[in-house]
Amino acid sequence: MPFKIPGADKSWFLVIFDETTKEAKPEKLARAPGKTSAQREVTGLRRELAVSKESLQAIIEEQEATNEELKAANEEVESSNEELQSTNEELETAKEELQSTNEELTTLNEELSNRNLEMMQLTNELNNLLASIQMPIVMVDNALTVRRATPAACGITLMFPIWKISCAK
Image (cartoon, rainbow, N blue to C red):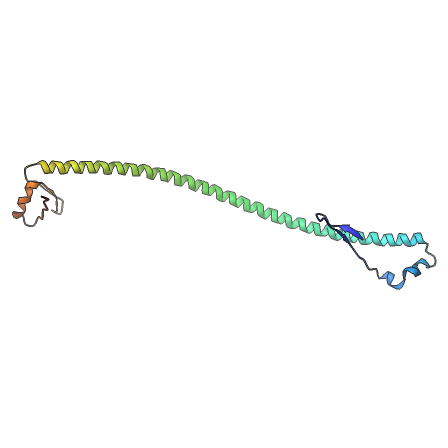
């Protein structure tokens, strides 16, 4: 019996062996008493129809099972897609937070650079002032460590030997 599988380009044939034909040979069927050839043909067609129905039912059941598997796979894909969308939104939020933090750090870095430049200018001015003063001045911290000294203070080290004043000449 010829049949086609949906989605396939090839035609298939189903060969059916019927046990009832085992006893009677085709020649004997033609000579069987009480049955006309039309009745035999109807009986044969009914058998073919029953086989076709069984085959069709099997194909339908296979297709239903495949459809169920596809539905389950589709639900999994949709679930994965939702998870990916959620992850994408979280990444977008994190990206915005990082951009905001980066802008704040850039602003702070600019402020620190400006302060450093200011400090360098003040240090240069202080060094120039100390270098130009003719009187001895020694600046110490809380631990009495010498931080700065004028050139005129270089001679004082003899009077205060605990102070180590380095004077550049």
